[in-house]
Length: 241
Image (cartoon, rainbow, N blue to C red; front, side, top):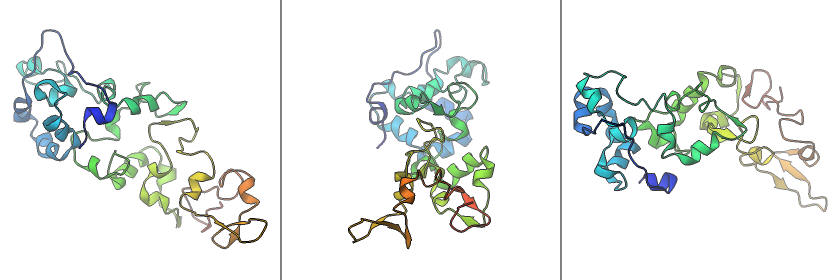
């Protein structure tokens, strides 16, 4: 089960605000009923229930800060922390992700032009379904499509990897590659498009029925001028243009 220790290997201390104290989850649930219905299926809920590293099991207030003034004011944003606008609240546990945002190419979260909740629902259960630990694949692609519309639009000839999710090829947080790829060379493509070495002395490499021996030495599959339409094509089934 997920825990702060498994995420960051460090003890996480609840947020503190001078002169304000915690009121407990049940007080929060009295008003935030919509979140209450979805939250039990979220990994964050299991974190609250099972993690002994959070003093007092403070739950909601571990991310939103102590809520006594928020309750006394009858709600509103003035006396409560909104992690959606303050990614440091997320980074307290997700240290690896915080580090990825420091890489040369990254989504502009630390610059304040994006926030974590544009792509992640911290209260929902869909977060459990993704092999990459983020969102359900279909929902994750929809999040990417809000900005990257040209890459995620319908194509006559679809790249099957798009069905598996954008994170199959891209690190959504940050990368040393300018396209935010998980690998910058042909190995990215060859994870799916398995190469077969010929039996001859020349050691030719075939992908499907096509001899790629020379082609693989000319650059990456897309930069060598071959498969440039990596997201999909309306004219070529081999995604060459």
